[in-house]
Image (cartoon, rainbow, N blue to C red; front, side):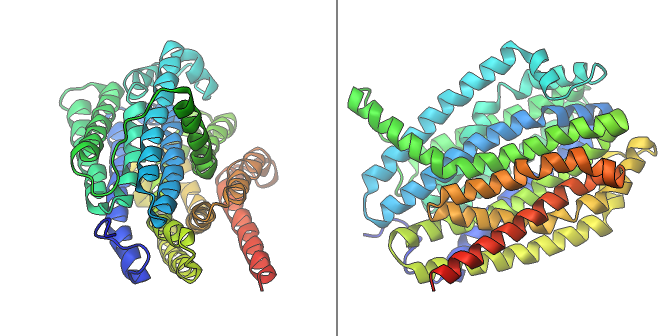
Length: 450
C-alpha cells in the first residue's frame, strides 16, 4: 500500500537520508541561529547579568525539550515499526497517546514551577544578584513549556508522515518570529529580559498551533485517534506510553545531560570565577544548541529509515544508514570544532561586546570548550542508532556516561588539577571518553556477531 511519498523500505538510502536531512537540518539550524541571536540581543540589550540569568533558567527549557524528545523519539520508533508491518491503526493510537499524556505531564510541571518560582531558581544555582532577572524571565518562559514540548513531538510525527519540509517550516517560522519579537520587545519597547521571554513563549505557541493544524487537517498517514476512557483502554495507554518512554529515555537523558552540564557548570564557574564566570560560560552554552542541532538532525533523519528497515528485517539497509550518518557527523563535527577554535573571538564578541572580566574569561575558554563539538556530534548519532533498533538500555547507559558519570566529576575535580582551564575542559573530556566507550562496545558486539 502506498502510504506516503516516501518509501522507507525500497528508496535508495542516500536519497532517503538527503530527503530527511536537508530540511531537518535547515529548520534546526535556523532555530539554533535564532537562539544565538536571542542571546546576543539579551547580552547587548540588557547586559551580562541578564545573559547569566537566562543560563540559570535554561535547564527548565532543556527539560521541556527532553520530554518532547523522549516521547517524540519513542513514538516515532514504535510507529515506524508498526507501519513497516502494515499496522496503521496501532501507529495512530500510539501517536495520539504520546501527544495527550505528554501535554498533561508538561502542564503539571509548569504549574508546579510557577507556584514556587524563587525556590526553583535557587535550586538552579541562582545568586541574589541574578534573582530579579531570573524571576522576570521565568514569568513568561515557564507557562510556554507545554507549547515547546508539543512542538518537539510534532516534528517527529510530521517527518514520519512524509512531510519533512513542513516540519522544517514549523521550526523555521516560529524561530523567525521569535527573532523579530526579541528585537522589538528588548530594544524599541524596552521590556528587558521579560520581553525576550515573552517573544520566545509566543513563538513556541505559534509552532504548536501549526503542528495541531497539520495533524487535524493535512496528514497523509498519521491520524489523531479518538481514545477511549475505559479501564482496558487506559491500561493499553499506560503500556504503550511506558514502552515509548523506555525507547525515548536516552533522548530525555541527552537533554537532561545538557541541563546537568549547565547546572554543574554554573555552580563550578560561580564558585571559581563568580558571576562573570557564569556569564562567560553562558556563551559556550549558547553555542551548544548548534552542536546538538547537528547531531540531532543527523540522528533524527536516520531514525525513521533505521527503525522502518529494522522492523522489516532489512538489516543491510540499517547498516548502510549507520555508516552514512556517522560519516556526515564526522564531517560536521570537524567543521564546527575548527570554527569554534578559530572563531572564538568573534563568537564571544557577539554575546559580550564590551571589554571586561566576563569577556576575557570567555575568550580564554572557548577554544578549549570547542574541542567537545566533534565528539558530541558523533556520540548523538551512535546513541540515536541504538535507540532506533530498540537497544534503549545501551543508549541510556551511554547517555548517562557522558551526561552524568563523567562530566560532573570533571567539573568538580579538573579545576584542582589544571586550574580554571579545567572548567572548560570538563565537557570535552566527558564527550571524548564516552565516544571511546561507544566505539569499543560497537566493535565488540560486531565481532560477537561474526
